[in-house]
Amino acid sequence: MEVSQMIETFDLVVIGSGTAAQAVASRCRKAGWTVAMIDKRPFGGTCALRGCDPKKVLVGAAAAVDAARLLSGKGVRPESLAIDWTELIRFKRTFTDPHPEHLKAKLAGEGIVAFQNTARFVGPAHIDVGGTVLNATRAIVIAAGARPADLPIGGREHVATSDQFLDLPSLPASIAFVGGGYISFEFAHVAARAGARVTILHRDDRPLAEFDPGLVERLVARTRALGVDVRLNTDVRAIQANDDQYRIVADARGSSSV
Image (tube, rainbow, N blue to C red; front, side, top):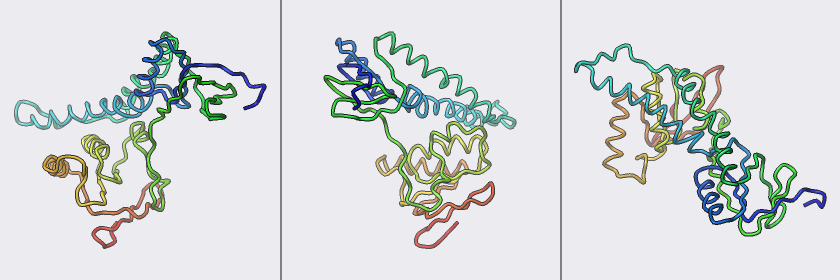
């Protein structure tokens, strides 16, 4: 820490601005603590900007399409019903784009000071944020969330994250999900109902291992009935770029497949 740097002192400094960060910051502020919050990304965290809330917009559209198709022959004619992906993403952004500034205004109203920059520890209780050092006299809370694992496969730079999926300007004609977690299944159902050809590649014999086996079996069956190609015991080894397409090399039960 340089002597010439500006120092601001707070009882609590929170790194991150998502749901957990907001909860601890608000409760401590109500208890009379002085509070600062830091985030290098737009304020709001995963749930509001890159997870739960924007996903619900996409799932809502997919559910509407599914409901109409289930009523086919029962008074509803869904033949011409389709998801306009570009318009749907534009609609989603009417919720996500204004949120950071709304949240910062809310925090300011509570007396919580927001810093939008990268946090860097320069001492046990000191954090540099854009040239200003924040001195935390009572606590520092790190609520910065998680990030996707760096897959140990060739061509991993070609893999898009869930953040990027929720911001795709247009939906590819075909899309493959590496891993059979609940996010893959949620996005696979959305993409399939939006007209994409979808594949899920999962390396074990059962996806969603922590969930009820009977329910998972029904989910896999329903997913396949939707037209999603669910491949189990399939270990992705590499992703190869070929012009504007990608080739996935995987091992399926000990044999090589593409």
